[in-house]
Length: 152
Length: 410
Ligand SMILES: Cc1ncc(COP(=O)(O)O)c(C=O)c1O
Image 1 (tube, rainbow over the protein chains, first blue to last red):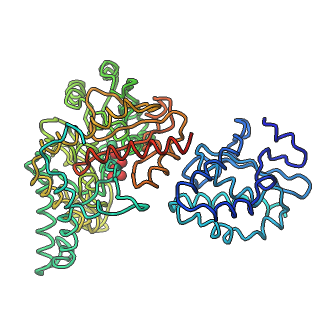
Image 2 (image 1 turned 180 degrees about the vertical axis):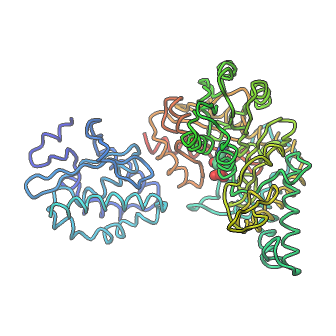
Image 3 (image 1 turned 90 degrees about the vertical axis):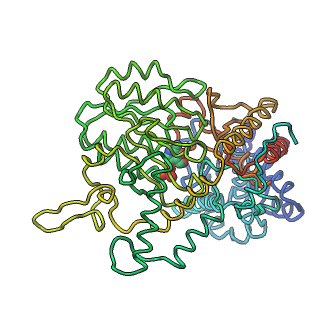
């Protein structure tokens, strides 16, 4: 358990969507020029995503279709969705942070309405990812959206 | 530069592989994934394209000029590949899609004779394609697939193997060279011990063909399986070599055209070997391309090539020893082609991605050898694998790139 687990109003235990927003990430990425700075930023974002407890990494939480191991759990608090996520790779954790910043703490309709393609295009991320990685990213997004859709 | 430079003109060799001058993410490509598939020299690419430009027709069928040329090219390639592995009878060479299909063919077709309780021994080093086909046949006939243990260094435990041979072992299926660790197995000893116990031996030669001269008779094995794409040939073609007396006794495994003698609803009879095992239109262009790869290898001084490859691998191992946080996996007596390692605290997937950003292509993960990874207590490795076109400078670039990766991830 990290301290953040005890923050009122954020049961996800991570800073994405609250203290690190998608707007923050968008602005920073626009400012970073070369691949090294951009990857470094993604890696650092990944380090801000706390590891999930072993007990939370259930079979059901595994996101299929990713090259790396990815776990994702959704929790609904009132009408808001909170996501815990983890991976065995920092870059993938960073990418999880990038998308959680758009979805964490949102209502189902906000999750579904969010223009994720526009956001990813703004970050110019996909150009730097292999097709397997972008498929994995897509799988994570689909998972989040279907959680929201199923409880709409 | 380092002192181990060999007389081989590697720059000239590299010039024959057009893809090696590619840039990746703004860097000249350093291709260290030849164990997954080797790159192709111009002569192979040209042979395939020339085949389609000038000779294309279906084989063994029509009475016209092109069909005759295609058949001659196709059967000529079979002969070349058979000679290349020391067989003087090309009927012993069955075209397959690769190693995987060759092993499946034996498991299915030879495996028909297995009885409940029979044992199939496979080493813990094996690629999944030398495990799963045996599990499938074992399930079908009630036989058992039993692993041969390997040491921490990644070597087959011959003493354990010897005592396992006291059981009702009918088949011993082992790799010639491990794709994950590079271990060169003592296959001649394994064959001798297995034969003494009355078992048949299949060798998975996928990782051996590019690096050493193969003589199936000298090895003494009963079956030898390999892939064209791991020996500078095209994907989609490979072969099974088998002992004639075993092959002629094996039932067909896929039915269709090419493999039949007479077809009627009263009963169908089958072709002789090798055609009995080659149902349907084969990969003719692939066979021709593999023939060209064999010509290419035959045109080189293979001892010189092997010495160069070993020197490059040794250089990588040596640099790895001095590299902080690097642990090498697989320290067998004899290794070939692959350098497998982990970086302390650095997830392999990240390392692979960040190396790629710097133009260095490696493979990360379990390398289709999950039982081996379990044995070693890890989930995978980072693998740099080498072929004749790799250089000492590329090893240096790997380590320079690794240093940057470490800085970025720490
Ligand atoms: C040792 C070994 N066996 C079998 C295979 C399977 O070869 P293919 O995929 O060409 O059938 C490979 C390929 O990675 C291998 O390295």
